[in-house]
Length: 104
Length: 137
Picture 1 (tube, rainbow over the protein chains, first blue to last red):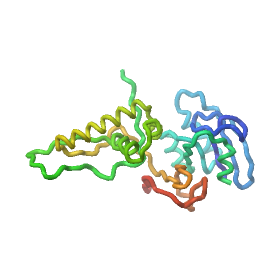
Picture 2 (cartoon, one colour):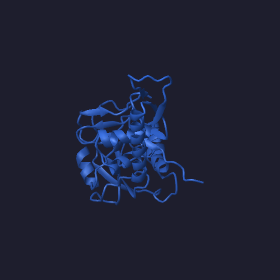
Picture 3 (cartoon, each protein chain N blue to C red):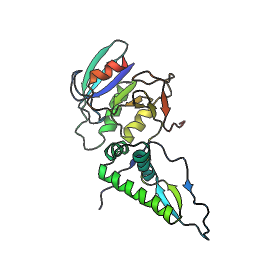
Picture 4 (cartoon, helix red, strand yellow):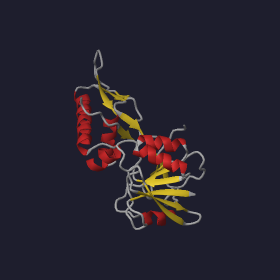
């Protein structure tokens, strides 16, 4: 299963970004192969539609689950439609590694 | 032109459509309209005991806006009690956030799409879950 985690930088000790569309980086974790990949989010500086664009990107990557701090209504509707599980974690000061540890 | 009103996110709508006073003799019953977001504000601060900042973040609005909604909610309820008016729940500027499930173990909030069949928290695999406002779509 492919899991996307929003991140503020391109390594596992980076802070978990609680925004979805405007997260700087997205960490792609595959829980079968334990492979970790980082992808730059190109939609962070859009004036509008960052959430939708990022959601479309996730759909094209065939991600099964997205972990972030919040999802806007448009992004959430789109992800619901494509049956992608969204997980909201509202804790502060988590790193990407903390989250990977929890889902292992 | 004033700035557009942000929609207020609401986790669960009220489970009632209104409250009526009894033991009063009124020819015609007046009513106050309690908006969904006002109900949510009262619920988050006085029932779930969150502070205004946390509650405002949950509803996707700023803290001052939240304080205004909360104040108007309290005044409406007080007016209804003192003037023995009916309380009606009306929709307001709300956005119902559907199909959320809360894990009581790690407090993560998540959805379960139809193609997934196991009902466990995706983070801590606990099955101590609470349906917030699940609707079959």
